[in-house]
Each structure stands twice: as structure tokens, then as C-alpha cells.
Amino acid sequence: MFNEMSKSGALRPEYEQIQTWVETDGVASLLQRREEAEALFRKVGITFAVYGEGGDPERLIPFDMIPRIFSADEWSVLERGTIQRSRALNAFLADIYGAQKILDAGLIPRDLVLDNPAFEKEMIGVEPPGGVWSHICGIDVVRTGPEDFLVLEDNCRTPSGVSYMLESREVMMQMFPSLFSDGAIRPVDTYPDLLADAMSALAPPRCDGPPTLAILTPGSFNSAYYEHSFLADRMGVELVEGQDLYCENGHVWMRTIRGPEKVDVIYRRIDDAFLDPEVFNPDSVLGVPGLMDVYRTGGVTLVNAPGTGVADDKAIYIYVPDMIRFYLGEEPILKNVPTYRCELPDERDYVLANLSELVVKEVQGSGGYGMLIGPKSTPEEQAEFAQKIRETPDNYIAQPTLALSTAPILTDDGLVPRHVDLRPFVITGAEPRLVPGGLTRVAMREGSLVVNSSQGGGVKDTWVLDTGPDTRQEMPDA
Image (cartoon, rainbow, N blue to C red; front, side, top):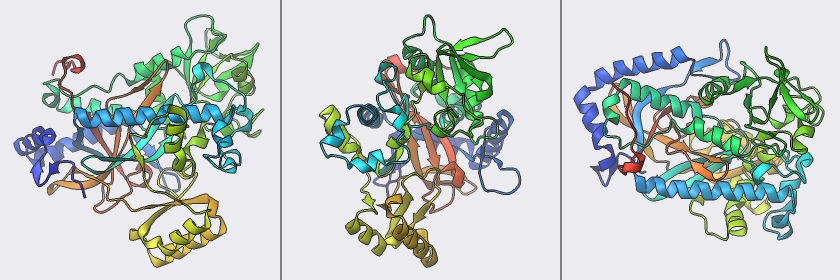
């Protein structure tokens, strides 16, 4: 198991500053500062709604003050690999809603795409502005060795977590400015501007001036509502609900105290089914009637485009390396985790015979729900999943249990290793860009492999080191 703080038993150079910091300040002092950090998180409202819990579902996401650190060379691999993957996924989405060349070539089973619940037939023939479907793509990456980065899953629909990335950095800079004094840590606070620039660059054809941007939220009861309001504030755009918008004369209009204001680009944080009751779920009260007609006729840009969820499917994930070769003519920089499709008889038989050693996931699942972690499961849980797989085999995939890398967290006993993953965010406007950081999620419990916030995981700041003069971060006055 790879410990990211050490290599061959020796402290890695990237973590020397952290080791000195911990030894100088002392564990007791840092634990006290952690309480102050948590108070800051609570003050600004950084909580996460956990559905299914009794009482008040809002809870503070555990924050660990020990950053996860990548060297410039390590990040270069992740940057090239995630951008490559995002480009291929965007090409795939454009193709399956257009010429469907990859299906005609037989590289992906036709029914796996066209019969997928997330495939939106209403999007066939639609060409989003700039040809971009997934403007914000979160690529979940795990590490199993010094040079071994693997993609765990893709998030092309509405990837969340960027607010925790930004707030974790802000809290660390506020509490420990000396750690950033040499300017060697690349900044992440450019994300809101990068996103606004990308949205503006892909304004719809009938936009006749500087585009007006907005974020569409389902409301304050959504688990990620804090992130919606946070981003709207940082980007300087309006946060709206469906009831604040209406469609007329081929445009989307926002109700304001100054009268109607045209909206050109909408970052939608609601699912496809609720976007437009005239096209999708007729019972939706969260969306905007007529929105899809305006979208299809070039009156508004939707970020991300409807129908992108098909690329999040864990059975589709298996074929992303083929997409990279087919659309880009390149070899994948980042590898997939070996994956078994339970709908295929031979692979299903293997999974059923090895449930105690595999991780089983629902193909449309997210947030750590609908999973079986074989080595941590009971015989009863394995029997339950075996029955589910037999009943609906096309609903499940399985993967080997990976020896995820660990990064240090702060405890009463000092620094101890815990498993981590990473969600970097690729933003595509005129060109794809990767923010030099990401959402590092950490399993707070010893031995746990589940890092999802919905399952009790925490977050930590992610540092990308770069001593080049062009990327040094200017520090505010301490």
C-alpha cells in the first residue's frame, strides 16, 4: 500500500515542510486549531445533507488540516490524462447524439447506450454551442503506487465538490499563512473566473451582447445548495430557482425587481428529469417550462448539456479507453480500473464466485450508495447482493478491491494514514483547462475505503507544487 508521505520508508521531499510544521507547532496545538477551522466551516455554512438520516440532516463535513501534496511532475500526468479523458467524453456525447459512428463501428454495444436510462432521446440532433457537452467534468482518480494513477469513475452531468476545494484552501491560508509564504503552491481560487469565462465563451448563437450568466438550483433543501450559492457569489452571477425564470420569444427571462432580464447561459444544478416539465417529467416544479425549446433553437446555453449523464454510467466507463483511441487517435494516459459487467454471463459468474474479494456498484449509483465492498462485507450482505445481481445483472458492475494510497490525517495520536481519492475539475470553454488542485476526499475511519461525504468521509486541501515564476501565488498580508 502506497503512503503518499513516504517512499521506501523515507519522508518524501514534498512533505518535509508539513513534517516540520507538525513537529514545530505540536499535535495539541494543531488539534486546537482544527476546532477553530471547523468553527469557520460552520460559520459559513459548509454542511452536507445526508439523506435518510433522522433529525436534522445537515452536518459538518470533517475537515483535515494536513494537505495532500502533488509534485509538479505528478500533476502534469494528471493534467494531461484528465483533459484527454474529458475531450474523449465530449466527443462521445456529440457522436451518440449525432452520427453514432462509434456504435456503427461496434466498439460499444448499441443497446448499452440507446437503452440507457440517462440517454435523452430529445437531445438527438442537438448541437450545443461550441460543440461542448460537458463543460465541467469531474474525473475521480485513485492512486495505487508512486506512478500508478487510475480513473475510478467519470462525472459529466453535475459534478459537485468544488466549493469544498475552494473553502479548504481559503481556511488553510487564513489560519496558516506562513505555509504559503514561498509561493510554491499553485492557486485554486481562479476556478470561479475560469468557469465564468468558459460559460461566456460558449454563449448561444442568438446572444447579442455580453452574456448574462446564472446558476439554476433546485433550492435550499438540496444537499449541495451551499455550493450553488457559494459559486454564484464568487462568480458574481444570479442564483435562481425555476420559478424565477420563464421563456418567451425564444429567450429565457429572469424576474427581477428591475423587470425582466434575459439570461443567456445557465449552469444548471438540477437533474435532466426536472429541467423542463413540457419535455421531461411533467410533474416537475423545479424546472422551467419551454426551456428545451429555447435551448434547441439557440436562445440559451445549458451547462452541462442535458443527456450528459449517459457518460457517467459505470458500464459506459469501461469503454472510455476505446473512446480515446477512436476519437483522438491516442493511447490513454490514465488507465481504468479493471471492471466486470455483470450482464455478461461469464463475467457475472466470476463476480458471483468472488463477491468477498470485489467491490460491486450500481451502474447508475453515486455517493457511495448501492455498493458492496466485498472484504468488509458479511456473508448475509454478499447473499443479498448476489440475489440483486441475478435479478438485474445489467444494473451492476464489479471491480477488484484496490489498495488505495493513503495520506496523513491529524489525530490525537499524531499523523496517521487514511485512504484518499481525488476529484480534479476540467473546465471546457474555448479550450479545456484543469484547475491545479481538486477535491481530495479522505476516509476518516481506519481501514475504510469509502471516502464519500455522504458516507462519513472528510475533505482536505490539495496542494500542487510549482516553483516556476509564472505560477507563483501572491500572498495576502498576514
